[in-house]
Length: 537
Image (cartoon, rainbow, N blue to C red; front, side, top):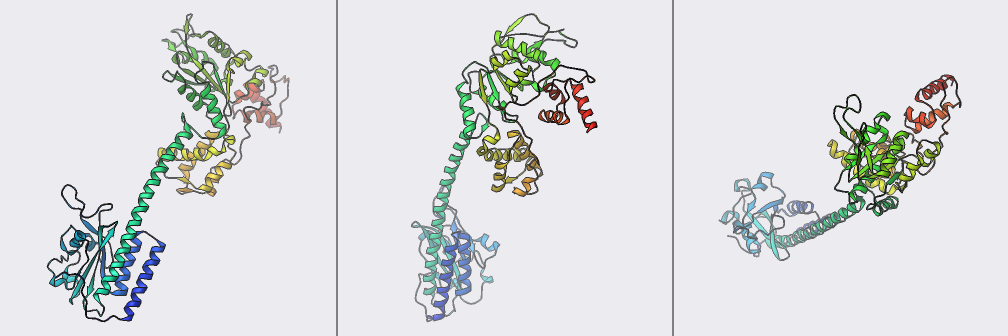
């Protein structure tokens, strides 16, 4: 029959005391190294068996965060064997105990220790985890002690012991009481750490969200002083109706800024139309911008609304406006002054209410001096100039931008690639002549082709451009040769060196038409001189 501990006949042996001290010393050493319950408790049960013969030790715990006798819908919460030594996985799986059922259930219900001196003589002993026929044939005792946290029983420390061993059962019970107390303290510390961790995670999530919100405005990522200065200027003029000219190198995010200006204005609910002037053939400019009437040209079977009409009451963004032909510059100036357009092939003026945002990476003042951009249109556009900083001027944003591009590329390509802290530092030191566009392209290429999930500096170097192209700053005049008179190939008015021709071609990213225009040549003249110079080299 189950009972509380009673004196037993064996006399204490000094060797047992040494074993007890060794067990306690090892358990305390484990606690000093780790507070993880699984690590400490499994080793504690192992030492109980090896040093003191307390076999098949198990720690039975209620569901995490709930006491075993906490009522829920009129039922009790079962407790399970969570840690054990000398039990198989199948035996542990069978060790499920309800409050008040069996010896373990009684300890859970009462919070009192129980010593069963002979399991064969105790009808309430269930032998649930290990059948009796798998235990030693001699008399087997069972000891079960409550594990308390904050005065509430949350589990049971229990084990088997051969009754015939020459050691006081009371000594075993006293030692198990100490170990059960330690187990309760470990569980309590774990609960406190988990609660603190959850609080910190919640706080970090809130702070991260706040920082992300501060670092991402209108879809523009970053918090550097140079970027915030440009955003501040943008917001101050957002409610005005005057034209805005965005200046800066290619890849600095002019379209994002133009859209941000639109979203922060009273026109936010109206259309935002973007036009890349560098991508439109000269012959199609007028019909694209202003539309055309039916029969205006061969193939015009019906009238078409142009981009200015589509942007009515909204914003039109003319990117790379420095590439607009001179003839179209005149018509654009008239539209800005009069607030009307005339479709190609039409005679009727159509009123449009459009705010213009223009952008260019060129130095328009130099273009005006060279005669390739109308002075009066420049003054009309340059009412509110906003210079966008290059990525080299906002290095503190590179870390945030790189993480953003990595996450976007991972999601788009179903990858799991990340950058080491050293790789991020290397990205911050790179000159980035192509600005944000170049950074985004490098990151996407890296995510697709990286050999390992964590990218090191050495691997990153494979994806960085070998030589940075020297891109002139938008605020620095570009030293283009002034255009001379157009002449035939066999009557050159100015002899351009191969270095001059190649440099101009590189500055215009291989576009011979733009390079020829900058040198005052036709495309045919430019190509002829380039070939001739290379043959003579």
